Amino acid sequence: MKIGVYPGTFDPVTHGHTDIITRSLRVFDKVVVAVAPNPSKHPLFNLAERLDMVQLVMKDIGQVEVTTFDGLLVDYVERAGAHAIIRGLRAISDFEHEFQMALINRKLARNVETVFLMPSEEYSYLSSTIIKDVAHHGGNLSEFLHPEVAHRLHERIRSLKS
Ligand code: ADP
Image (cartoon, rainbow, N blue to C red; front, top):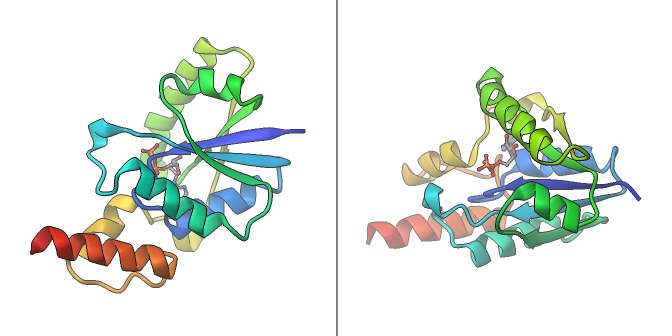
């Protein structure tokens, strides 16, 4: 069974992430979505909240497991019995950072490959950061997020402002 691990912060999960997961399932038998704590990124949602939203969005997509991990990603990938790290590539801006990560991960674990997938054009500009910006200014998020995720994001921003 070919297993791929898709790591990220998912703060919050967007249709861009879902698009990458759906595409991954054409290549892998199973995808493990690994939500990273990433405290240094100061996420808007805590780890449990991010996990819950990814689980909610993925509930109807088969062969997807949602979990969290701590420590080195490549160690987790090996523990999970997976063969590859899945990453999404948006515009060229993602490339440099992703290239560096892929090479360091390959140095750390020779047997773990990184596979890059490109999203549908309509999501190629989408990031959790830009979504949070739109939400902050009261913009409509229905094209970018699952309705419940959009609701939770608006609520979070409202509570921060009050
Ligand atoms: P990280 O903090 O690791 O960048 P993210 O949750 O921002 O976590 O992203 C996880 C992965 O999903 C990364 O590989 C990122 O490039 C990819 N990704 C995020 N949004 C999109 C999108 N709209 N299209 C394609 N890939 C995306």
